[in-house]
Image (cartoon, rainbow, N blue to C red; front, side, top):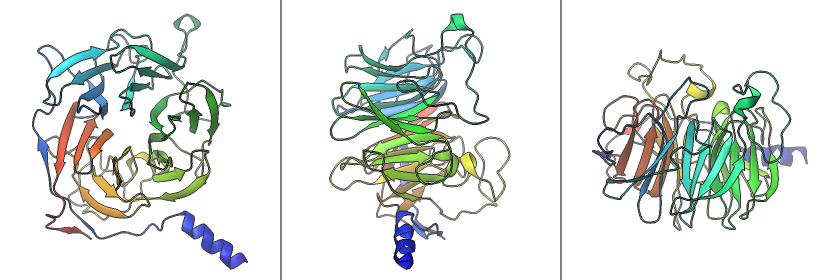
Amino acid sequence: MKRWLCFAGLLLTAPVFAQSVPVIPYESVANAVRLPQNMYFGEVAGVAVNSKKHVFVYSRGNTTGPAFGAAASQLLEFAPDGRFVREIGKNLYAFAFAHTVRIDKQDNIWATDKGSDMVVKFTPDGRVDMVFGRKQEASDEAVPHKRTGPPPKHDDGRFRQPTDVAWDPAGNAYISDGYVNSRIAKVDRNGNWLKSWGERGDKPGEFNTPHSIAADAQGNIYVGDRGNGRIQVFDGDGKFLREFKIDVPFDRNTARAAIGNKPPEDVKGTQAPGAPWAICITPGPRQVLYSADAYPGRVYKLTLDGKILGVLGEAGKQLKQFGWIHEMACPSENELYVAEVLNWRVQKLILHPGQETAMVR
């Protein structure tokens, strides 16, 4: 009996072995989105694509004032050809420090703002439809949340530096909450609070900065548990199903850090190789998952059970290089949009699988 239980436990966690995987050839489309004259991106935190192939960019631009209490969020829409269409939510009360933008199946636009502790759902025409969370009142001497020490007790309906949102087939929304609370919140399609699960830690079902979240066609929830360097998978009720980590070899002598000193070989957490900063799952009957790390700055293609199918990219400032990919959109298996914090841009990537010429070993 004990031997059977040990074997079952091993099935829940994918083995963390270095894999030999193909390097996927790809190209970056120059000027994939084009800003009007005298308008600029700041740090590009989020990117999403709707059913009409319009591209939505959530950037830390339009900032004024000090680092805390700034208005470092602007949500911009671009046509499929990259032409600027409009700004959504200009001067919105919830826009403080952009984190991610997502588009649901009805083309509603969801902006997750780390600075205001809020998630805002816009209709496709750009009107506010639902508001989740509430920011601290300036009249009450608002200060940044502390991430040190034990996390505060969870408060239903409120967030502390939320990071992302995803939906299951029934329209329930799952909000990763986030830098401080380290949990996943679930609300129904009408905005009613249903439940939350998780707390800070490194055991299955615990989180250390759940930074990115996605759902598959069956309604399973994938959480990029960045601080723990893993992707955890749950059912829609929060039951832990499995986890997997990304371990693909690279040449440490030639690898670059996107900024700062190269992390040590035994680094853990955010800067660890394979740590999931951004994840997305493709639509369609054959779904795959993409994940991006900060160092050595690569994008990984995986099956939904964690098998690595390919790898691409490196850190840097040129096209086809990346500076901290913060969010990805994958409208199809071979088309990716990546939002970069350090390079202040969006890249559109076209992948060419089947043309691999090298293997990472």
